[in-house]
Length: 258
Image (cartoon, rainbow, N blue to C red; front, side, top):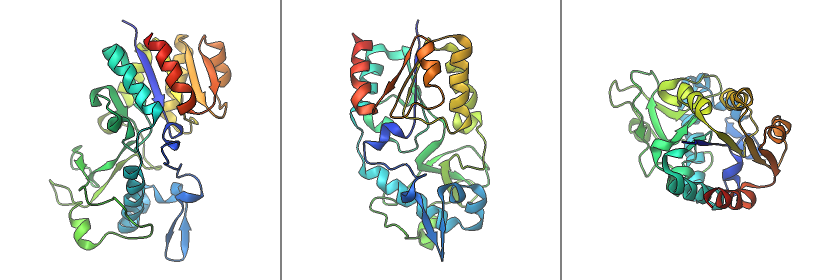
């Protein structure tokens, strides 16, 4: 049975109106200083100023909640429904749009976490809890959570403050929370790897592409910019397709279904 594996990054959600927070819109002011995302999205920053980091993530969550899945998200759902267990999706995105589009959660590995969940900052367990529904929608930029709101984000087991369930920049992948080994196994089992909207800026996506190269399976890349694996994709029997996910992915999916 052939396994078709997809890897998605921020590019697939950009056309839903979700900005890449590495850009200028990702900056967050604390006091008199502007923090870059790579400075603020760290466990060190969270320990030092948890209210400020939570405020930033709740603002980001509000943006994601106001967005809707686009035609590229929907095309992937159609493919999953057409081929069932032959489909698997690995996503770097924390916005939740893939699941909102209708995927079976069992066929989606969210390797950077989920912006709509929190867990214990002291890691007393691997349990993940949903952020209360009213924390996030229309969250104003710069607003900090109140003491009462932070109380609602405490660990259900030990009472420690909860933290966003995301992979911070100063943390490493693991299996229990971020599907590290499971994602690699899928790459070893796949008969083709499709990569949509990622710049390969983090470790695990690079490993998946390297596994595809080692195994000699077709690699397909859809992205506005060629990136580091475009030539490999062209030589693999797959291909590099320059353009947006909304423009290029739906017709590619329809050919796969047919």
